[in-house]
Image (cartoon, rainbow, N blue to C red; front, top):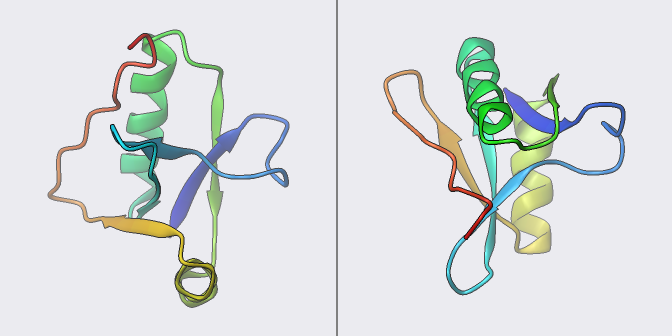
Length: 87
């Protein structure tokens, strides 16, 4: 699986989306191409440049579940569009 991180700050945290209640959800992409496409959409919306980082699926899900952090797995057939950060 793949996550997105700010380029040059890959060890400092991962990109997560926030909802209207300020709850954050980590995006776990099953395919590199989908992660790169999403990063490109973020960049097109003037978001800082992101890099894709391959992660161990079990470890990442275990960490999220043990800390109570929300996550979602993005499968190849799913269409996901980044929220505008101008809101």
